[in-house]
Amino acid sequence: MTETIPYEVTGHLGEVELRRYPAILLVSVQGLEENEAFWVLFRYISGNNQPGKKVPMTAPVITPEKIAMTAPVISGTAGMSFVLPASYTRDEVPEPIDTRASISEVPAREIAVIRFSGRASPADVASVRERLLEALREKGISTVGEPFLMRYNAPFTPGFLRRNEVGVEIRR
Image (cartoon, rainbow, N blue to C red; front, side, top):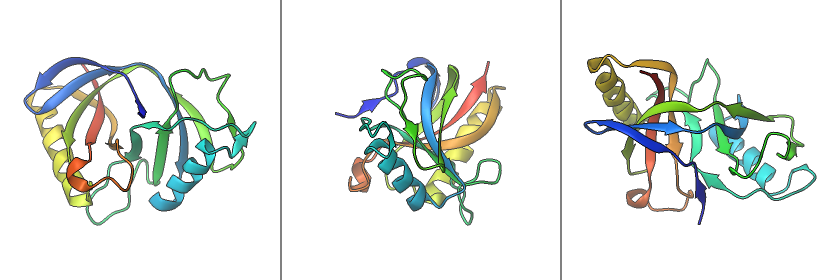
């Protein structure tokens, strides 16, 4: 079973779930097309790191939101991140050999999410993003940064069985 990021549900706004997440470590790639970014990260967890150690796969895989007719964007660059297992500290994380990958820590934060199934097409993600942001606006909840897509399943999982979420950091 794939490890997932633990979280505490802190509330609901209709279909929006509010969650508190602990600090997490990410291995990320920026500025590459999604498929290439995935393979750089997959090779990292498969042992393309110092000291050549396999790193367990976790979920979700995090990408910037996809907006119809554009590439994934966070501050103008495409990206993808794998969450590293909670058992690692920053000092214990294997360092990437591929210089396109980097390790970062995301502090504890509160995130608002909407869950949906399917293949996370750009149109589906854009629709969920708009519903999420509108629900937060209606309640006067401020967002921090840009929305992002979280995918929990392997690429070969049938669409109707896939778990996807669009999330955004919030301040209340």
